Image (cartoon, rainbow, N blue to C red; front, side):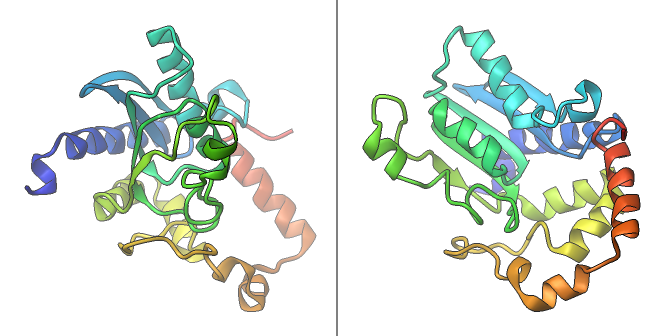
Amino acid sequence: MDDRDTGDAHMMRRCFALAIESAKQGEYPYAAIITRNGQVVAESTNRVARDRDVTRHAEVVAIAEAQRATGHTSLHDCVIYVNAEPCAFCSYAIRETRIAKLVYGMRSPVMGGVSRWNILGDRVLSDTLPEVFAPPPDIVHDFLCDEADAALRRAAPLAWAFIRRRRLFDTTAQSEAAPDGIRFAHSQRARARIAMSEPLMRVLRRFFDRFGRGGAT
């Protein structure tokens, strides 16, 4: 069956639209949707800028809303859709809430909880503490990744150009992530490419604090 005919594709495209809305709200262009039996339980954009709180990632906000909606901390019968691979922080929340399935578009080889740190696929958690952690969720990666990339480009062209240059996301579909994550971020060549003076770094940090983080102090 073509991806366009699946429920996963429908939810992912809804997620892309939310990510565009997130950018329009002055947030980073990320979104998350949680479903149960094909029905939306919770959905969220990033809320870091709005709440002035760097922990308010879309996935974490959606998880909190889903737990309130269901009345349970365990989301073992739920699916989460995100336009980009969850970071390590969000990946741990996904594991602790026992979400059964994750679907995401673009891989994040610098920050991702699969590609860089394999939190989402780690079995030590569930083998050691099966009372707390379920086995790793089913993971569908690179799903509609070209569309995810196009949505990001439309939502935040400047951020998209920056992300492309730093290779923060990867839209080249692969059968599986590199076992040790991306080597680019750790290479001497990469460090030399992004090396800059401390005054310039402070200016850039102020810029990024205004965009998607709710202002600078």
